[in-house]
Length: 197
Image (cartoon, rainbow, N blue to C red; front, side, top):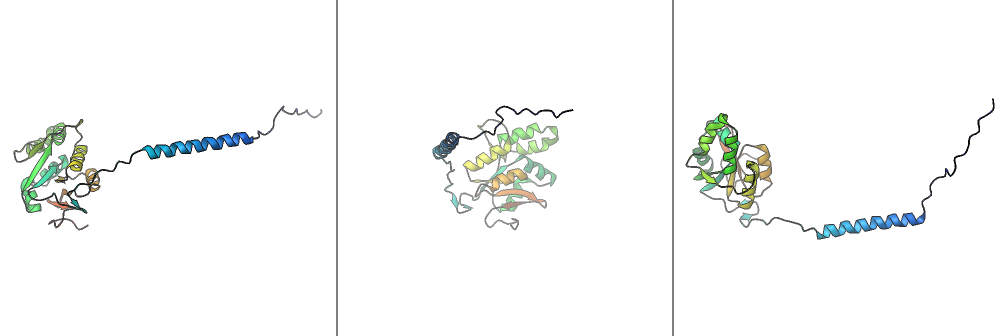
């Protein structure tokens, strides 16, 4: 038997890149880069205006009587720890406190059902002020953060870790929470019972 002839494939050559193609690619890349630079220049940098009530990190708009925005789980934790909300706040801050409950927090308590009816009854207490909400949706955390960003005269009472983390990013807003069966407050100048940071 003889050896089979291998036929050469016609025009099987490596493709050569012509100098014209290289120039076209460079021009394309440069045009893309210029386009991105123009886009960056045209975008406005939106920096939120700092509150005039802040003196460095110290919030000068805070003072007795304190306005305390209450979150859903703060009411639940207060019930679990058998703490009376208004008197425990006064014990923590040594001053008169006005608890505020937003419509979103009330809606959240109503959604939780009959298991949390005591918390709902507590939130409807006449000593608690109601704040109406004008925005869409009933997610209480977003509502509280938005309200605190607009007006820095509030102390936020919450035991929710995610909400605490979000509020810590806002300068000059103290956070009240339940710790060792009493209320403590962080980021408040000369506050009694505040944990050492």
